[in-house]
Image 1 (cartoon, helix red, strand yellow):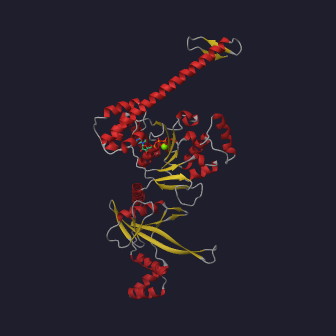
Image 2 (tube, rainbow, N blue to C red):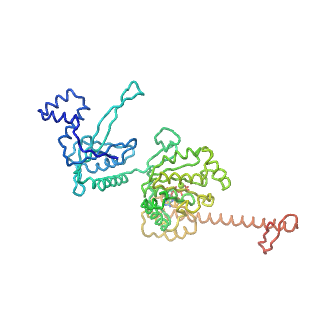
Image 3 (cartoon, rainbow, N blue to C red):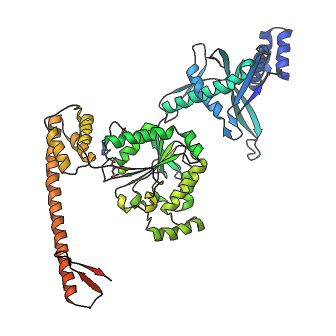
Length: 505
Ligand SMILES: Nc1ncnc2c1ncn2[C@@H]1O[C@H](COP(=O)(O)OP(=O)(O)OP(=O)(O)O)[C@@H](O)[C@H]1O
Ligand SMILES: [Mg+2]
C-alpha cells in the first residue's frame, strides 16, 4: 500500500543543487521561469527542496493514491485525517463539497506540509502531486492523455519506523473512519433510476437519494422491552467482527418485522439505519426479471448496509414448497428463470459469506402466517419482531413526542382504557394527534376516534360471530342430512351432542 524510500539525489536534484552551489538562486529562478515549462519547473523545485531537507536519519513513507487499480485506503484515510490537522501556518487550501455532503471539506494543496505529533514522535506530512502524460493510441486528435499522480509523503525519524507502522498508521485509519462515520449522509438506494440516482436510466443500477427519515428509536412507539432487546442485538452485532470470523459465519443478521399496516415497520427500518449509520437498499422483488439481475444488484450493494425486502408475502409469487422446489431446480439450470425465496436466501447467504461484511437483511410482512416456511426456519431470520397495535405505553410515547406531554393529562386514563379495548395503529394515533391545535383538543379527538373504533369493531365482531354461527348451523344441518342418508357416502357419524361432526374414512 505504501512504499518506503530513503531520499536519493536524482539527476534533476543534483542539477538544482549545482545551480545553487554555483550562484544566485534568483538568477536560476528567472532563467527557469523563462525557459523551463511549468511542469518541469515544479518538479525541479520540489527536488531542490528535497536535497536541502535531506537528512540521513529520516525515513519517508510514500502513500500513493492508487495501489494498482484500486484506491489506496491509507491515502484515503490520510486525506481525511489531515483535514483535522490544518493549522494557521498553512497558506494554501483546497475546498470542495459533493452534492450530498453535509459540510464543505477543506484539504491541503499540493506542496503544503503539516506537522503532527504522536506520542513523542514528530511526523511531517507533505502532499505531492505530479503530472504525467501517457500515449493515447485510441484518439488521433488527442495523442497523449494527462494524468495526475497524487501522494502523501510522511517523514519521521527512522528509529520510529515500527511504531509509526504499528501504531500511528492504525491511529490515522481509525480516526478517519470515525470522522467519515460522523459526516456520513445515509442513503436510500432503490432499484432502477426511479429516484434519479445517476440519472442514466440503466436498469440494474441502484438509484440513491439521501435518507432523511426522522424516525429514531426514541420516536418509535413499540414494546419497550423488544426495543431494548433489538438495540442491544444491533450493538452486539456491530461489535462482533472477530466472533463471526472465529466461528466461520458470514457477518450478517436477519430481522423479520411483522404486523398490520401502520404499526411502524418501515419506521423501524429507518430507525435502525439511523442508529447504526447504515445505508438502506430497498429491493422490490417484483421489479426483477431474472436471477442474473438480482445477482448484479446484490453484488453492487456495499458493506455496512441494510437490505430491505418489504411485503415479502406479496412481493413475488414465492409459492408453496412444491412449486418452490420445482422452481428451485430451475434456479440452478437457467439463470433467467423466476426467483425462489429459498434460492434468494441461499444466494444472499453465499454472496455475503464470501464478500460481505456487516450486512443486515430485513423482511417485512403484514401476514406472518402466509410466509414460506423457508423464511421462518430457525437460523434464517435471527429475530422476529412483532409490531403491534398501539399499546398504552406506546400512546404515552406518542403523546410525549407529538404533544410534549411528558407526565399526566386528565384524558390519559380514559384513552389508555380505550386503547386496550379497541385496535388502533400508532399511525392512526399519530395522525389524530397532529390534526388539531392544543393538547386538550387533540386528546379529545383521539377519545372520539377510539370510541368510534370500539363500536365499529364490536359490531364487526358481532356480525362475524353471527356469520360463523349461521355457517356452523348450516354445516351442521347439512351434516345431519348426510347422516340421515345412510351409506350413500363414505361418512361415519360421530355423535357429540350438538356439535356432531363427521369424519371421512
Ligand atoms: N410504532 C410507531 N411509532 C411511531 N410512529 C409510528 C409508528 N407506527 C407508525 N407510525 C407513524 O405512522 C407512519 C406510517 O408508519 P409506517 O410506514 O412505519 O408503517 P408500516 O408498518 O411500515 O406500514 P405498512 O405495513 O403499510 O408498510 C410513520 O411515518 C409514523 O409517523
Ligand atoms: Mg411499511
